[in-house]
Length: 438
Image (cartoon, rainbow, N blue to C red; front, side):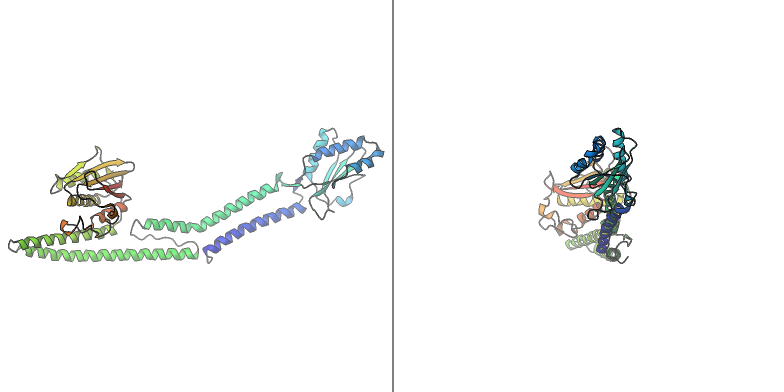
């Protein structure tokens, strides 16, 4: 538990290398003295032994010494003995070599001959490379053949190298699994942090992994609590301020209404209404920042139709709705606020608002256009910032607190949608909102 992430990865790699080296040592020592290991020499050896047996048995006894001398070369010695020496009894037998030579003799008509194949224990310089073959002749003597050839060591009939490769692959897979296990808390942390960005409620991330990762997760959990506390305090503060401001604005409005009709009275009423709208927008912004998305379904077409019917001036609002209901995964109240901000923004800066709804894959597309001055392309990335205003076309006199598009962006992001700004075919601004279909 006290090992760091780097130390854990180094330990995993070191253990994998150590396991491979131990396996290699096991096979090495098993090759030297293990009788369960079988050997297989060159495929041409059985045919050569059969030929030697045939030549020796057909040659006259007087010519055999010259024949043995002619055949002995390059470390291969041929001789004749009465019995296998007793000092070879403890040598390792090569059963597969014996079986292959015996099978070749049977096929050639020399069945029933005794065959022995053993490593030469006297070969200390190159152990495992020299072995001796004893083949019984028809006269009862034994033909001795010293062979210098590297024997392929096998286990259960399969080359040892195959087992070593399979074991190496298994060790590598185990090492990768161990590394993935150590990196799993980091991957979980990245996934949870990405999920945190879509909501303000703290997400308790379990503290697992290396000490560095546990410390990082602990810091992220504490940061979530601090952020949630700050947002709650801000919302409560704004709510209290807005409540008190509403009280004073109501009293101020009553006093202004009691004033005689004049140009100054009308201006005071307009100022009070603007202040009231500013307070409402600020409170809506605070609430949208703290609220989280809840499962809900609403018909976007029906919301737009009701909004147009209840608007003070419905004529400038042009609707283009599909024949079928356009249901989105957004609450009805939230959807009404989104539509009110978009349509109000279009009517505030243009004469008409052109609204269209269409289904496009897993989303429902709401497009709002106006015939106003539009927004320059270099300013479009900033209009979603709180209280940001473009003085050239949108100022205090035209109304609004600079929070309408900010609230819209917050709602869209909260429900997993997208919003884009572009140029309208009517000469103004085009706002395209994609909301997830229900």
